[in-house]
Structure formats: C-alpha cells, structure tokens
Length: 207
Image: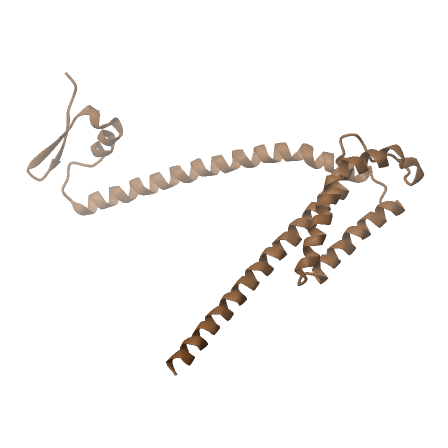
C-alpha cells in the first residue's frame, strides 16, 4: 500500500498522498514538530536564504558558461577582422577618396535633414548604390590594376560589403529614421492646427 504522510496542525492532521508530489512532502517534512512561531520563522528564513543562494549559484554558472562560449566564438572573428584590417593599404588615394565620399554624404544628409523631398531622393540613391554593388564589384575587380596596388574585389564581395554597401545602408537607415520623425512632427503640427481651427469655429458659433 502507498505510504501517507501527515502534518500535525493543532489538534488536526492533514493527510497528503504520494500523488501530491514528492517535493511537497519533502517541504512539509522539513518543518519541526513544534508550534513555536519563532522557530518556524527562523527555519523559513534559513530555507529562503538557502534557496536564494542556490538560485544565485545557478545563475552565476550559467552566466560564466555563456561568457566563455561567447569569448570562444568571438576570438576567431576578432582575428579575422585584424587580418582584414592589416591587409588593407590605407594610404591608397582611391580608398581615401571613398571614405571622404561617405563622410561628405553623411554631412549632406545631416544638413538636409529638414528637406523631406531631398532626403527621400538621397534614400533612393543609397539603395540604388547598394543594388549596383555586385556589378560594381565585378567591374572594379576586372580593372583594379589601373587604380589600386592590389585586388581587393574578390568574388565574395567582402570588401565592397564593408566599404560600400555597409556605409550606404547605414546612411539609408539614418535618412529613413529622420524622415519618420519629420512625418510624425508634421502629423502632430497638423493635428494641433485642426484642433485650433475647431476651437475657433466653436467660439464664433457661440458668439
């Protein structure tokens, strides 16, 4: 026959069958056979401290494991980035011109941030540049000797993605966010004007 457990509470007994769960039975059996509230409170505090410490240890182990895996996976990526960075001749005139082009384009986007029409044209131009990146990479890969000391334009397009498509996409995101903010501002301004017009019309009607 299955065993039954009981918990004394005053003059009553509470029977708990095994189906209630082993953890509940173990938790109930931890309480001492006493009615002293101070003893019960002290034991509850000790159990709470023990549970908190156990949870903290589990969390700490999980964080350490995730950090270790992240560092292990990040190291090869960091080494590849350093190798890519040092393989580039940063004194190439055309490369300096490309970086200057991106800086000028960013300044133009900032200066024209209040001109919504120009911003949308700039947004479309940046997307067109990203769309033509593959063809541009193929063209420059076949003619790199005329302007560069080495061929950066590999078939996978890593260089073009980093120095052409990446900055253009970042600029497109900036322009898009600025345009959304401008539209929100215009919507609020139009709504305020509408409410002001309604209030004025109501005052005229009452007069």
